Image (cartoon, rainbow over all chains, first blue to last red; front, top):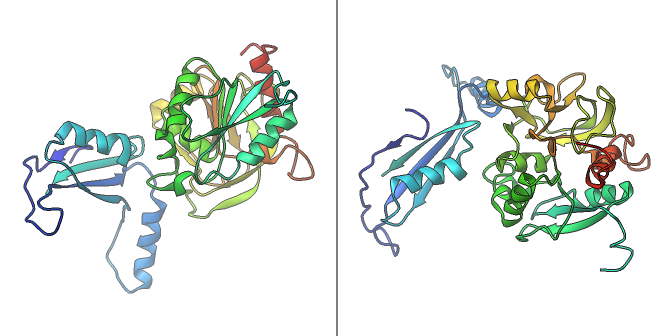
Length: 99
Length: 235
């Protein structure tokens, strides 16, 4: 998926789970670009065999954001939220999903 | 404000965010160099008429999200960006460098050290250019020793940005000896296209007298900008 692609464009409402009522939930995932060395991911790769967990060739550590947003927040706004604050486009790729 | 505080011909703002650590040392360095430090607060929406601005080091907003990301979006930084576009000299040190990159005043980004360790040491550096508002007093090619203390200090930028920085003489400082953090091309400091905005990971404000620092090599950053402000050096 290309950086910043919006997926699952059709917003679906979550069932009423509490006092907040039904709220569309948006997920933004941010990962370092492939060409950016990720020493934290490498440290994880090196730790796994020490736990006896084998077969993991690479790990990229990123960030996962869950946003409760108003119904009228459009794709363009979500794109700006992701690309202008949650991710730094110089070093990171991101995806936006409506759940 | 007392009369002697306003007597300095050059007033240099020093910004404090929640989590800033080195604003006191930066203000001390400004005073040591002969200018008047002016405290600026993160919520200020103007710069109180200062002639230059230092964005000091520390952990603004706890490095939440990314180092410098939240600070770069505060009111005072909007004022700094506006002032920089008018040619006001701006120096970002360590977290300040990260903030200036996040604010788009300088290209590239600072990411986690390649070795994962927080590096704290007296660092040898080469001053690559004196054609900036903050390095006019140095000889190009001068070797200096200034403290470095950071874990998000690895400078990265794409190849076209690097080509522009190198081609336009905007790499201001390079690490000498073993790389402390894996920065691309050993870059430890860069300048804007007009040479007025400089960001660097090492801390010149911690190297202004032999009592408190490993050298006095950092003081000329602050003397240089006084020259630039007072017009005695054409930058």
